[in-house]
Image (cartoon, rainbow, N blue to C red; front, side, top):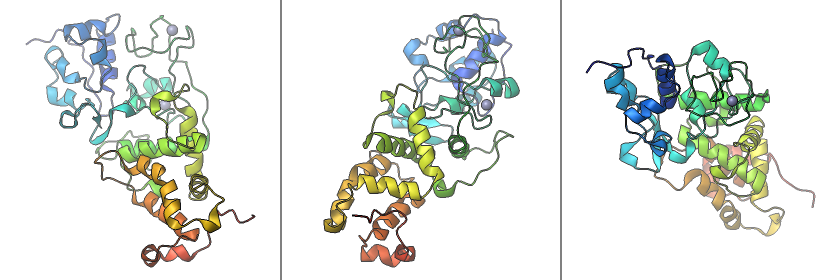
Length: 334
Ligand SMILES: [Zn+2]
Ligand SMILES: [Zn+2]
């Protein structure tokens, strides 16, 4: 079949599938990608679903479906609850596809609408250290995929000079780690991406990391788990709180565990009751899926917390000589 849209931008490995469709639409002077989706018989809900397959555009663009399939988030084997971020499994709820957020500076420099920005908890550009832009500075509306160009709002205003606010070093550092883990299973990387020391997140899968950030942020702020959809500020506060805890690792983490363990009831508590008060937190980290890609460092730190606070299980003490060291954070003034 001859391709009706011969001006088709080659997808780069980090490209967002929806972003690529927007580029295709702009390259062919369409007023928005809507016509393309109509041609492919995809309705509004299908467009912003992780099940959307950019490969449906293969016949019209001259790219083969394998090349375009790499941009897809769909995970046919796992049904609706899970999806695929490049080569890693994440939860469908980890993606925010309804309203795009962008780093205009990255688009100007690299020309790519980064798949990383499609992740719910990604609020900041790891390269430029500024918050992602999700609203047009001119009309104030949330950005839409149905806009005339990658750097043009629906209202016609240019977005290339839009800029998010400068983020704290801890938030930027967390996003560098997120970026590294998100694209870890790919042979390519953005050349600007510098390998960072992952610290306690070494060995973490993207699925675990997203769950961990959410748990750290929500348990610190609300004392309990919250679902991602319940934040008005686009997760910024949750991510910033998690970033603070990670920047003072492991002290701030012990402090969080300590507050969850309902201190100070210290002297009378048995190890079992402390463990049960941490149950919910542990479940939100390790439970609710058949995911076995857990982060050993974090698990060990929880064990160190329990051991250093005097709830030493002899089995753990044998494995953890560090358990003998002074507690990193203990309330002793009562
Ligand atoms: Zn950027
Ligand atoms: Zn606008």
